[in-house]
Length: 226
Image 1 (cartoon, rainbow, N blue to C red):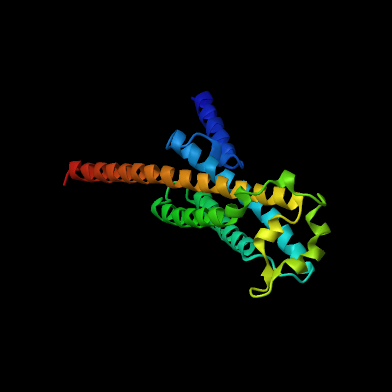
Image 2 (image 1 turned 90 degrees about the vertical axis):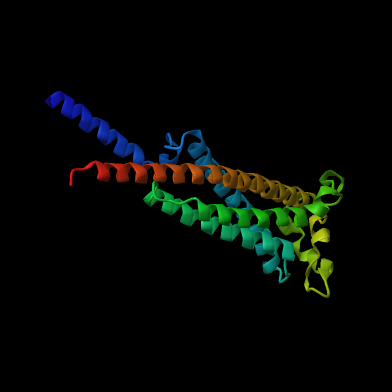
C-alpha cells in the first residue's frame, strides 16, 4: 500500500510541476485539439502584436524626434495593436487563474471587434502598398532614421502630418518594413478569425458540458433518499 501511495503522490507532484510551467497552455487540453489550437493561435497573436509594436513604434519615435507628425495610419495601427495586446494580457491572466471557469462568449465578441479593426487597417494601409514595388525605389536603401529629417517636405499642409503614400515610397527599407507590418496585420486578421471560429465551437462545447453536469447533479439529488 505504501508503494502505491508513493506512486500516486509522485504522479500528483509531476502534474503540479507541469501545471506550474510556462507550457501550461500547450499541454493536452480538456477540449482536445481545438483547445490546443486556441492557445497556439493566442500565442501567435501575441508574437505578431509585439513585432508590430516594435516596427511601428520605431517609425513614430523617429518622426517625433524630428518634430514631424506621423501619418494617421501608423497612429491607428499602433493604437489598435496596443489595445489588442492589453486585451490578450488580461485574457491570459484570466485563463491562467480560472482555466475551467472562463466563458467564451465575451472573448468571441471582443475578438470579432478586434478582427474588424485589423481588416480595416489592412485595407487602408495596404491599398498603396499593394501597388508599390520596393525593389524599384531608387535612392538610399539605408535605415529609416537616415531620411526622417527630409520628411518635412512630405508633410500635408492641411492635416499637418506626413503623407502616408509619400512616406512608404521614401526609402527602399521603409517600403520593406511597411510591407512587413502589413503582412503581420494580415496574419493577425487570420489568427483572430481562427480564434473567433474556434471560440464558437468551444463555447457550445462548454455550455453542453455544463448542462450535462447540471442535469447529472439534479438526478443525483433526486436519487437520494428523503
